[in-house]
Figure 1: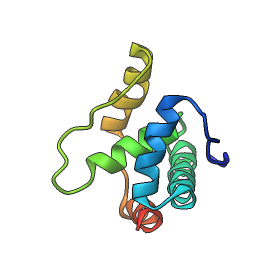
Figure 2: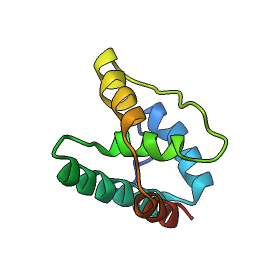
Figure 3: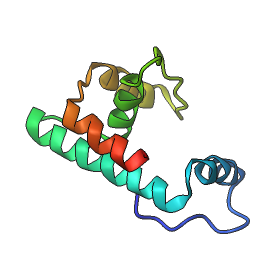
Figure 4: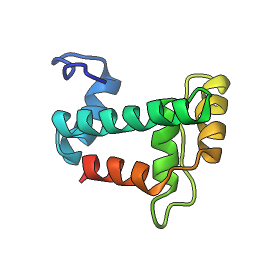
Length: 106
């Protein structure tokens, strides 16, 4: 969030992700979506009085999309799956939350 795009010669994982980001609409649009996810996460954390991460909101938003029944997570260790996946599956996003993220992703 807020980082400049990776430079040429970056790690291959970044390079392959840049192809997807470019197809999605570019780095600026990607940053807009990250900002919207972060704002929703901050608001949810305040309202619920617990930790809510950008990743949790991204997963919950994806699960809220029509026709989506599951999300495949890539994680470095089991704690990441527990943290993001399990918690996100229980996170309920309201209409305003979904609309804010949808607007950034449009």
